Amino acid sequence: MALYKNGPSLTHTDDKAFDIVHTPGTAAPHPGIYKCTGCGDEIAIAGGHTLPPQNHRQHNTTAKIAWQLLVYPVQQK
Ligand SMILES: [Zn+2]
Image (cartoon, rainbow, N blue to C red):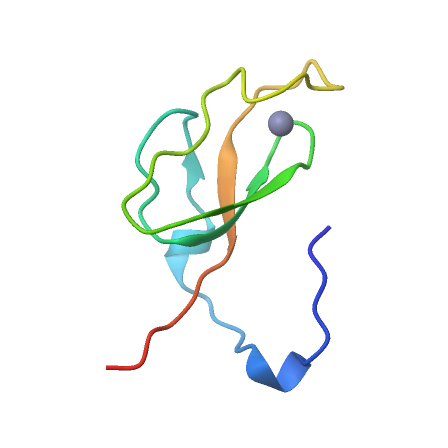
């Protein structure tokens, strides 16, 4: 589970980007932290990069492996 210390630095949102489950090996639509829906592993990914493939590591689950956005950064204009 992701950790944080300074809660006021985070903003809650209902952005639908957090509802989408992404297939392993596809492009991440946002940079940020993604959580594996299968085993709960979390990764950080840079903008324009590809989400890890299904064999990103050994999983302690037989559940389907997919990535869901957990936190994304908001850059100042
Ligand atoms: Zn996983």
